[in-house]
Image 1 (cartoon, protein in one colour):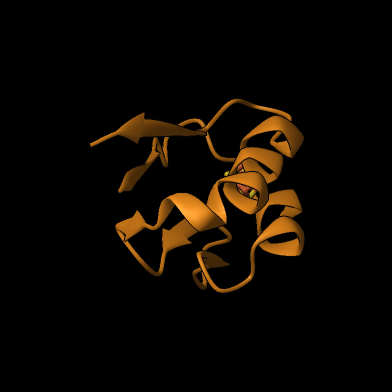
Image 2 (cartoon, helix red, strand yellow):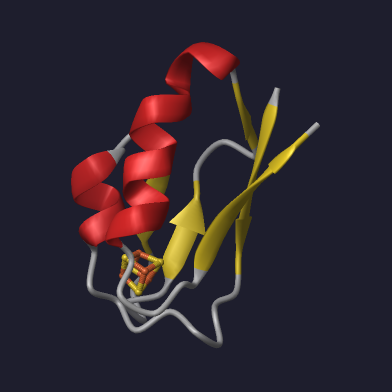
Amino acid sequence: MIKIRKDIETCEGYANCVVAASDVYDLDDDGKVVILRPTVDESERDKVDEAVRSCPTAAIWLEDD
Ligand code: SF4
């Protein structure tokens, strides 16, 4: 499994992560990233990797479980 991590202090609400993986990332009413699923399966790595690469502020990252 892959753990989905975030730092909401760093998030600036660009929503690139939501575009890349809308079933894993969302934005709250303050425009800060919300993690919809704390872990994802290895089969979803490409999608969450893309989300991490597309974040302009490096506010999200992955950890291997
Ligand atoms: S792409 Fe980065 S800065 Fe934008 S909402 Fe997602 S985590 Fe926040």
